[in-house]
Every structure is written in C-alpha cells, then in structure tokens.
Amino acid sequence: MKYGPKILDIRKAKKISLKNLLQDQMTPSSYSRFVDGKTETSVNNFVALLENLNVTFDEYLYINNGY
Image (cartoon, rainbow, N blue to C red; front, side, top):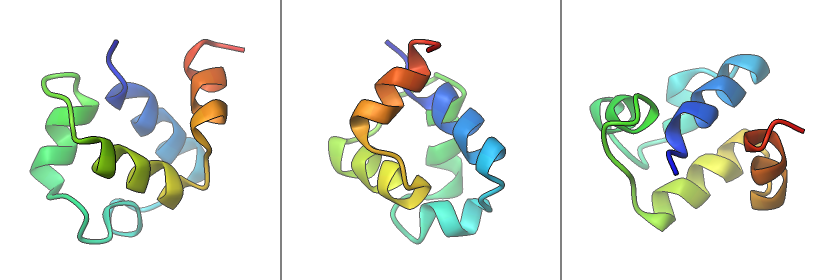
C-alpha cells in the first residue's frame, strides 16, 4: 500500500505548507519521492508527518479508505 499520495492530499486540503509539514524531519526531495509513491519512508517519519498534519493513524486509515 502506498501511503504517501494521501499525505499529499491531506496536506493540500488543510493548506499546510511543506515547510510546516516537514519541520526538518525529512528533506523535500525525500518527501516528494514518498508522496509520488516512488519510495516508502520510515515509521518515525510517517508518524511525524501525521502529527504535523494533526491526523491520527486511525483518521488517516479512514481517509485513505475513502470513507
């Protein structure tokens, strides 16, 4: 399962800047590859992205499954 593309959708919907989302947790190029579905990221990075988006993992799964 690709987790990155939905992170991008949530970020855009919430109008969160890339700088505020990443907060030095990962590089913009790593983030770009992740949201493009070209690579995965570490659990730590993924959790940090969710926290910066103010989204729990359960909420993410709900959104990702199209509910």
